[in-house]
Amino acid sequence: MAQYGILVYQPAPADPMEIPAEYEKALESYPAQVAELGATPVTGFALQPSTAATSVRGDVVTDGPFIEAKEVVAGFFVIEAPSPEVALEVAKLNPATQHGGGVEVRPLFVAPDE
Image (cartoon, rainbow, N blue to C red; front, top):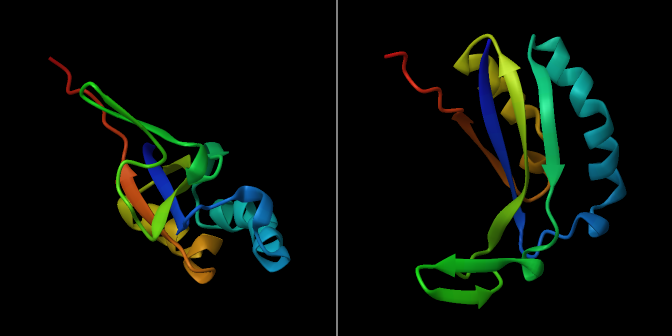
């Protein structure tokens, strides 16, 4: 099965210690919903708040995210799914989409055989 990265965006600073109880409850049921769609969670991580970020662009190092944004990447996970359509359905079920954030789905890069 192909693998897809799902990036989770939340309003800045996206502190995982400050998520509402209903969001936390929705996160608990999310893996079962993913499995029902025929996808398999591979791995996932929440990130520290964007205030803990350091950005590097060339020789310039700055504290915090490089650009000012209302939303920041709060975490990401990888799934295996039988199709891009299933990966999109998994993304649509992510609790972030109902709690002020959003998600982005990208197929993971696989180098072509030579």
